[in-house]
Length: 380
Image (cartoon, rainbow, N blue to C red; front, side, top):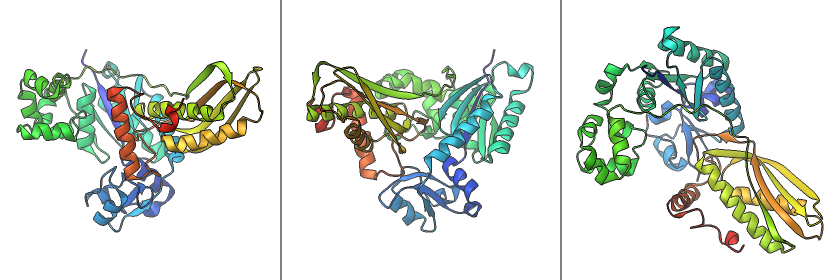
């Protein structure tokens, strides 16, 4: 049976949410981001015309488009709207994967026997727009890669079907940049070899790509040829992420406890960024030597940055540790999670800080989570 895979993407999601609140922003250049030293979290098509892109420094974006209105952004609102869209889609499809806060995959395989898959998808998109007011684009094809590329080519508010016999003619003339797994480094490497279109890449021997890129070479060749067997992973929302430490000997060493908390936060924050979560609620738990257990929690702006989370965790620890008694257990939990495509709080953090975290995460991915960290977390 031929698969029927749909990729859906909410058009300029953050901007569209802000336009729901303020209709005066319609057809105006809008940038979502934070501060003069921050970066662009999202931008309208009107600003993209001038070359503005996500993750670009705000100062550079304003030099390209001085007329743009900069809005700090409301992650809680975006999260709520994303949940609403998810509920609308879930009611109508057998299998849904939520790839990010504004991006979805649907598996409609076999549904064409009862109702044309393309018509069904059109009705789902109409329902999303009717219930939320948000614009959304989609592409329908036989796998995730082709559907995602199709959505990108159909935006804004595009509705596109790429049947199996049309996959190669559709992909061939496109730049290799359009393939989801091709980053700037890979693109530059392929360009130096004269491989700039998907057709050229699809005709390159797999062995050559394997030598150049490593184990991802064969996967890249498959995608260039429109081959992708990746399954749709049914959506389920994670509720929390946490860690605890039970000591072999009860302790009253405050400096060491703060150091342990620092290490815990760093570990959990790295996990948040790897899984692309932001947290809005922090809890700190302690258990005294007499087994009395106390917990304090607080709400915070959505983030996955170590330095922000650590500040709140240490404040909570100061509030919860009220007795001069030895501690046998300490724990940290993050809840109120939202799944988004941003690894950092782009509304607050500077370009330099984001670069620092991205570099640290790359080192941890390559050499292990203990390979680099804060000095305060290493004291433990």
